[in-house]
Length: 262
Ligand code: PEP
Ligand code: MN
Image 1 (cartoon, rainbow, N blue to C red):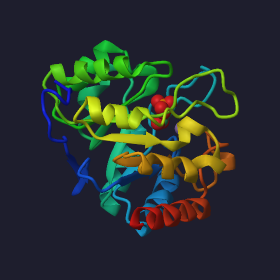
Image 2 (cartoon, rainbow, N blue to C red):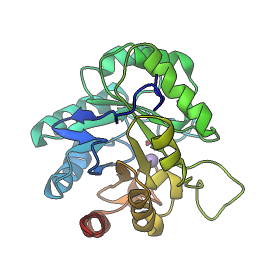
Image 3 (cartoon, rainbow, N blue to C red):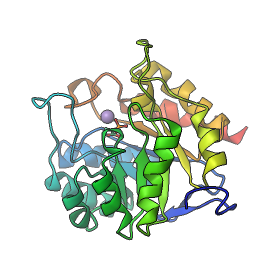
Image 4 (cartoon, rainbow, N blue to C red):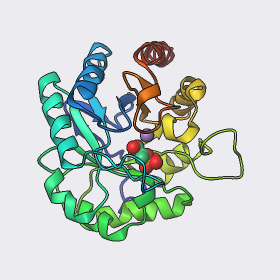
């Protein structure tokens, strides 16, 4: 169902008046994790100034260590919804278990399925059974074929609003957190009719690479970029070494805006 052979025209997912996949690239930004109302509110103000209409923020955080901050859960989703409504921003947040899919419908505009859950088939089926756009991230070590099959799981249950997100894969290279598989973008665009985003934060894991990686993503045909921004990255409860502060984020946006105009 996700195959380009089945449907030749691009799928466009529309959220908050933003068309994802219509040829003009979009930006999704926000903190790694929801930490407090004030934190999310301050990020929302900056996004608004930058004309960004979709805000991310993790409420359920799939962390490598059980002792790391696990997220605020439903309370975090409540904060996102309230801040989103106050600022006219659509909300995307990760859901990690099938039983939370229904509950999340009240809070988010896009459900994110994270890299660690790309092959959580019960979660994919649950996401496929609701009427809400799904952003599906590529698994940590998933082939493009496995990634496409994961999207097929969602669509096979009836939900056709799927956005794919390349977020880097694990290789032997240690200079970056993951290896951004940049050619996955045109391959996914050829093989499927779905919008494809590039997450520059989790793929590179390096603040100094966010701008070049985002430009590469746009140049190779991505429908948008996802990146993390935090009021004070040094004190962030997750991904403190790679989130941008507001000044860096403004620089990021200005570079991307001029790049897109060229
Ligand atoms: C995230 O976007 O918050 C996240 C955890 O990313 P990934 O699933 O790509 O690691
Ligand atoms: Mn993160």
